Length: 395
Length: 70
Image (cartoon, rainbow over all chains, first blue to last red; front, side, top):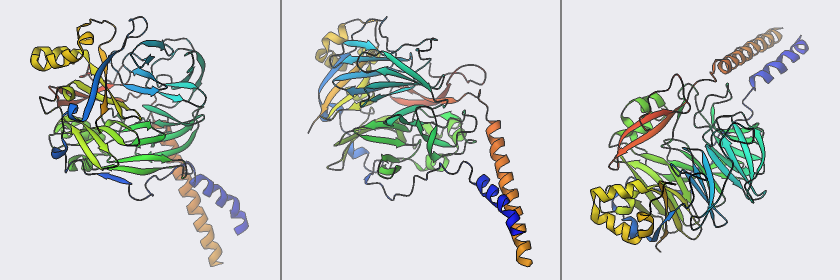
């Protein structure tokens, strides 16, 4: 009798294991290595931008509109002395040299099979010398040569997401950002996938019933100096992917999330529909993070402002740039941190309109910027409203 | 005899639980709507102060709310 039940037992155990085998729990590795008490010391760490950043210069992207037109600068990757610049608004991706001279555009938007529908992110494969564009409109990866920007091939991954990061040859992290549109394949906020879209592992589980909100003001997936970094929305912990354990490990703890957000962080519609996020007591980590061996540069929201934190690892010292200080011209003008280079140069996006607006509201401050960057401010360019600010961190 | 009965009962319960779990899982998959639009958060500032965390739609069509960030 028992023997007759064996097939039944095997079948039931197989069914009960369905979809559980690729789950990884990411929270088993103890405390993060480094802690930043951001909220506690915020005020005393505030510093004027030009007291910490020197050799500030503005870089104009020199191109003509038929080649490249930037409505926004959403991502910059500094690779082999060139800037790879993504404008998500118009789905434009182009390469510029270190002086802002246009080199080439990477692919183009269109309906042909070698044209992308929309770019949400890109990643550089330095080993195979390729650039990979991710379009979530048709859920495909487009491969281009880094040598001449020529189209190589396209692969459908059939998964929606907001960010993609190459991990090793033909495998990627896809940050789903709570997308539930993959016909039940959701429930993990971060996937390790291959170039055909096969899910190898799922990380950071979430309940697909709680949200289809794609958070652009918090949470990030990025790569900085051989570290692949991830932080879920409304979370204080920054995780680093370990190739040794093949898992995410807590790396940095930035104590910033306010109690009201902690209490509601899984209730997305409540956060979205109520005024919790814009309450003056609300604070949380933003969507921008980059680092090198010495510094971490990130944004966060506090006191209804988007502030910038610069953390020095060797001294455990934090510096805060806040646009609350009306005399701190540069912090008022910069939009978001885009990159930090190995030699401690920081890169920010900046809008020309903001500078010209300053002319109307505070002409003395405007003149300081104009004197330092006369050629750029005075030149009228229809090509790009966006500038890049580059500076070096003072020792 | 008692042991055999218990084993049969346990196996039957396990089997039914697995089938129920499997159907719930399958149903969840089917109920996901591929055409469902995902809202995208956006921040509106004035004079450096955040005045609204609004939403825009990733895509266009029915179900999209007005875009306060355009």
